[in-house]
Image 1 (cartoon, rainbow, N blue to C red):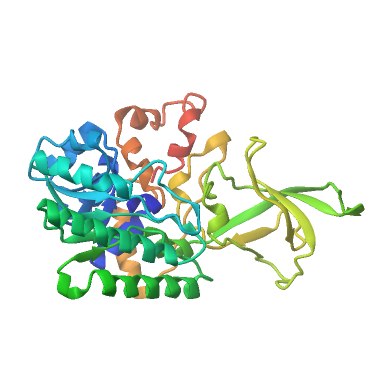
Image 2 (cartoon, helix red, strand yellow):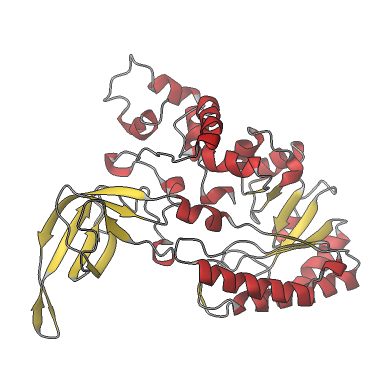
Length: 392
């Protein structure tokens, strides 16, 4: 899933390994087209599509596309599309799911498939996404079983479905390996039961979060602190407010922070400080809702020291915007000598500093280019400060 991380280094690395791409709009499709990716390696995985983006996809040969409603079916005038009907995932143990926004409910599947058949459209499979906030891998088992039932319904209507897209939500992160293995075991077991190799059904997935979560670590600086004691069970307890130079309105994941198992550690010794200080960590912006952690035990920190936050790869850089005038952190890469040459090639071909691929379309627009000319004053360019910092 391109949306998880648009860093050119990530996209090029995955491309070199032969991975395919889940794109949700024209911008993301252009990103992968720029790398020479052929349209048959793209699934247009957005069930609510802008009509102009749909035309772009079809004009460029992308024809594996998701849908989940009557209204979306009506957008398909081209009968050569290969459609994946997105199902609402099972909600067993789900703490945050996507079913309110996306997905066909099981009881509506037959009616929608019958309409697609009447319209002369070809539904070649199903897709789903369980989200990343679930308590038990059983959610995968339940959803795969429901998809098997819908495959059977489709066969009775006259469709030969050959693709099951099991979406994303695979646990990533440096401490999630056991959880990941449990999820994989559940998925393999259920696929062997409902979609064995002999069924001829191709299984695809969208593990963007899994690939990138642990690949990035954020270095952030403590810029200030103040003590504000609180009363707990009638006892006054030391409570520190710690302010850092990053923000949930920039590179720190907003909605998914609590699910990504992000931890802190100091760069300078002592490294084994006890986590015994009740702490609230505030982000850099002036927004009063920009707090990272609230009333959590943390180790003692000093003003001007640097901290490391791990598991910062998924849905972090892609959210960066430079809100409130705070700049986008530079991205540094660690690579083996064998990979260094490949990275240099990416740096030479990319129109901006890697890490922030979602800004590429803006950099290519003439008004932005004009604002970046040296004869424009800093004041006149202040709204493009974040973009200016990205100029190579």
